[in-house]
Structure formats: structure tokens, C-alpha cells
Amino acid sequence: MHPTLRAGGLAVVLAAAAVTAQAENAAVRTEKNISLELANQIAAGAVAACAANGYAVAATVVDRAGVVRAVQRADNAGPHTLASSERKAWTSASAKAPTQAMMESAQKNPGAANLVYLPGFLLLGGGVPIKAGNEVIGAVGVGGAPGGHLDDQCANAAIDKAKGQLGG
Image (cartoon, rainbow, N blue to C red):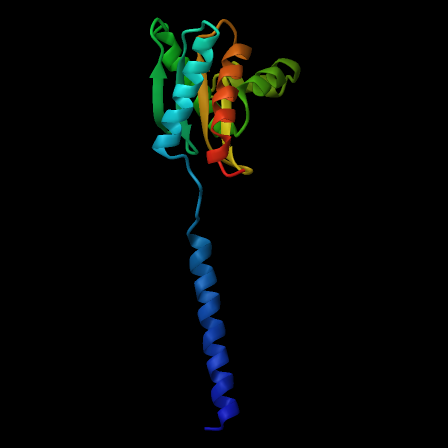
């Protein structure tokens, strides 16, 4: 066989292998997600931020799929704070948006008002997405301060404290 034909045949085989590898890679996704260690740090940071202001709260951190990774409840925080913090975190991770902004949008926009009917959605301030760069890797929900805007502040304070570990 002529060397040029052999090289041409090899190029066709290599091109076919590259197309196959691309097809296989398209079927498998690589995603960033929050670690247990970071989830625990953010939950503890949110509870501490609220405690510094005299608020006894619960904080829940969920992963990118909304599955609980870490929960902390301050001494004297009401039992209802656990459910509200989890629902806020889940809502924020699911929508990839802060629950405070979602609540405000639902109050102003009749179409968005229907979000309150989605099972599990809790449109109260205190749920904040956790991002690595522009990718949502989880969310934190805080419940128990005397106002969702205050829960929101504690959640953001905890995320800000962890910024160096989020790579973005």
C-alpha cells in the first residue's frame, strides 16, 4: 500500500475516534457541587451572623440539586425555622435565584405570583444561591430572624465569608 494512502486511512480512523469520543463526552456532564465541609462552614457562618445581631435562626445548605448537605439551628431558634430554612434553600437552588428577589417579583408581577403554588416553593427572603464563578453549586436558606430581609443578610454574610473557597 502506498504510504500516502496508509496515512490517509490512519487520519480517517483517528477522525472517527475523535467523533466517537466527542459523542461519548456529550452524554456525560461534569458539574461543580458544594462539599460537605463548605456546606457546614456556610451554615455555621449564617447562624453566627444572625446570632451577632441577636437573632436565633436555623440555616440549611443544599447542593445544586436541592438535596440537604448541612443544617444548624441556634439555641432558642423555633422549631419552624428548620422547615423554613430548608424550603428557602431548596427554592433558591431550584430557581438559581435569591428568594427575596423572587418574592418581590411575585408581588409586582401577576404572572410570577403563581410561583407560590409550586409545591415546595417558599417565597420569603433568606434563600441565596451559592456560586462558584457563574455556576450555582448550592444554596443557603436562613429562617428565624424578624424579617426575611434580615435572614437574607445573614445568608449573604456567610457566603461572603466563604468567597475565597468558591473560586470566583
